[in-house]
Length: 237
Image 1 (cartoon, rainbow, N blue to C red):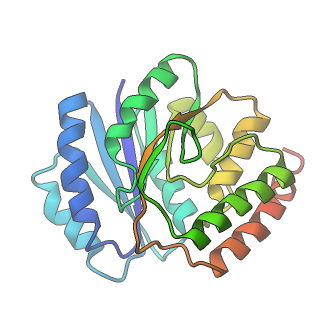
Image 2: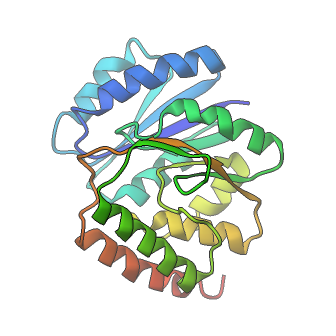
């Protein structure tokens, strides 16, 4: 099965090239040429685009999608997932906090019937050699608890940036996704849960990246507001 790996990127000229150099050889080894690596530049103001273009000559399966102006992580992931051609479509973060090799845990779940596979840092078998700071970790767990209460999702970790979908699930979910910010993960999982799509949670090896793009107070407040809107946004569908 062809794999599409989507990486949303905003001002990632420093971190992204290393991620691509780590991910690309692994994908080649595992999938030969039967994969594509899609970077969606989300209106970057640095040299992200030039950095990706410089690597395309040595990475034939590397594609670049440009989103102008900046639309948010959710909008960038949506663009990449709907532009993808793979039978399995996965998105991961530009900082490679979850290594692309975790894809090996995704494939058996898809083959076993899962439509959506999500990495969970709360899984008892997950390994977190470099953890978030105490405050960020507590805020993340609190957000998940509030989210689960508000929208009724059973998943312990909605925000880990490593999720995979069958092509059919991706087309169904991302064409209906309306949130463009960080809370898009909750919306996607809510839509999948409501549609009774089989969702599998997998353990993950996850390394905290100190230069997180999530602002400690502003982004969780916006995410909380967005979560309150989810049911209203999809009322009548």
